[in-house]
Amino acid sequence: MNKQLTTKIMSALLCTGFLVSTLTACQAADSSSQQVSAKESEAEKTTLSSETLTAAENEHTREYYQKQLETAEQQYNRDTENEAYALQYAQALFSLGSFDQAQEIIAPLMNNKQPLPEASYLSAQIHYLNGNYDTAEELYNGLLEEHSDSFGQKATVGLQMVYYQTNQYSKAQELSMEDDDSTKPLLDMMQAFDSGDPYQIDWNGKEKTEIPFTITDPLPIIPIEVNGVKMNALIDTGGDNLVIDQKKTAELGIDTIAQDTGSFAGGNTADIGFGKAESLSMGGIDIHNIPVMIGPFDGFTDAFPDVDNIHAIIGTNVLQQFIPTMDYTTGQLVLRPRNEVGQSQLKEEQKTEEIAEKIPFTLASTHYMFAKGSINGYDGLNMFVDSGLAAEDDAGMILPEETMDLTDIPMPELEDAVGGGMGGSDYQEASFDVDSYGLGNLQLKNGRGFYFTGDTLDMYDDTGFITDALISHNYLKQYKWTIDFDAMDMTFSI
Figure 1 (cartoon, rainbow, N blue to C red):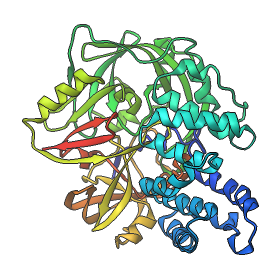
Figure 2: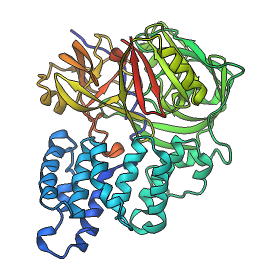
Figure 3: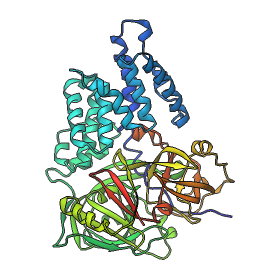
Figure 4: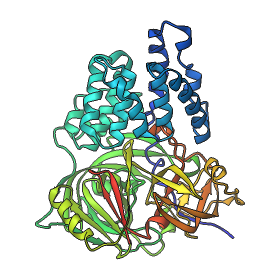
């Protein structure tokens, strides 16, 4: 039986190309093995070699970093005062997605009068992931001021990402990068806003807005206007901000400010542009000064034969301006102001709801939301929450081969890919049965999963930690899903 992937992934798909090493913690470990070991006077306190700290090509797997963790933990337990061992242990925990544990290990190092820059960098990364942007900014600025030679570029990229998440584009005017730096296109786009910060919202007298889905399956679609032009848009947390069909940019008057190459399903690539839209209207509210990504939409006609005029994607950073609810149960997107008023609205609404689960999440790179989950009883997995992928046989997650092996799922028979989306069809795919899977304790029984060839789920260079699974539309659509970007948790109601 043919398994058709009706819409390709939009996450590491769109942004891996230009955000390589944005928050890659393994770089800090390399420098720690050089700088910290110089401080040790005894041979038995020599740090692990850089070869043990940096994964070989194609070794970004849970098994690999679990072995690193075991070695690092043994050395740390033998000498808990050794700063190099503490850093290596914390780095191994970070690579596996155990961020709070990693922060606990380096906490004593951060209490020193002059913390090691490696400890400050790793701590800044964890604060960033947890949405503690003020603390992350302080740590990155400290690295830039005191350790510009060894950590200047990493701190600059970290500050850029903090300003991106907090809409402080005006501060990005002060940053500079080499032309060949992988994050330069993002910085060029941010600096094109000059003194005007993005996402200026006019509620037009509304307290909140409810936008009915045009359709819910295979993915939710809503009507929007960009620069006064009406069109339909997918809602996709695997996308970054507002993504626009490159064939519509001339009509919309959107210029390409910067350009890079994006990676898509099956390893395919395509040119991705960066620009700015003057206005985005949806549900009766108007948003001005919107960051835009520009990419190919050629496959969407085939993926959505019943809906025309699909030329946009509403990504995570648009939703992040609000307290959003993807209400699959009633078929609508609810947007509340991201302030105390919106929080009060949400609190009152949830008094009448049956909350199934509240799950913490982290936000990596520009938009990758991760939460802990389980597959076939195997707990603590790092799951990328990407609402923008759907398979026709109700598969609700994508797994790499390593996770399938880990959770005792045999590889199904592969077939050539068909279908639409941004990734083309130059790869193979198959679906499979899974006993149980889900986020936190919210487990679906007797479900379906999906596998396709390529290394799309190897997001380590963007995040600094492994990705065990991607969880998506056919799982999420069972619930009323609210994302709180201040509390950094997701609430699932039924």
